[in-house]
Length: 168
Image 1: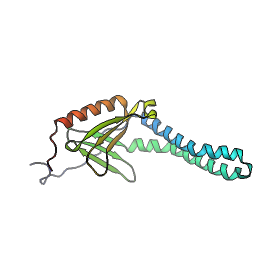
Image 2: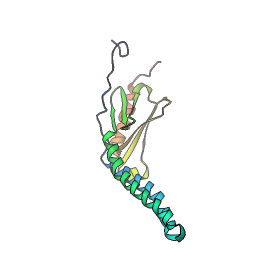
Image 3: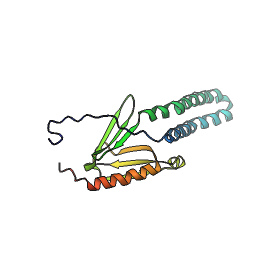
Image 4: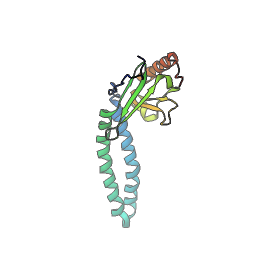
């Protein structure tokens, strides 16, 4: 019986985790974001004596919150992000409270790209972006080893080339 005609499809969590270096990459992003807000406040607080308390207090609060986020969020994300590529589709699951499952059938894939920003290059990571005609946008697998990402892009290109397009 063809899939879709009475057959139930059961989703299971995708099998693959991200590269462990993604934790460091995310931590550096949080650290830079925190510094972007804390440093100007601290510098102004050091230079403007009458406003010192009102500038250093939010700088300290932001520094503590940023440090906590830098330590905790990347670990949390690493535990919840999963991905898998099969002959039928690309599966990505993200989130904990608001879980999002993205499934891109091979027959709907239009392009496959790899991206390596400066911080990703520093950690030898890459992002694979799978573009479909979905209004939701592209499916992204971030935090992959850069060599694995290149292999996945090649694998996806071969699979989609050999997969007939969806006639619907």
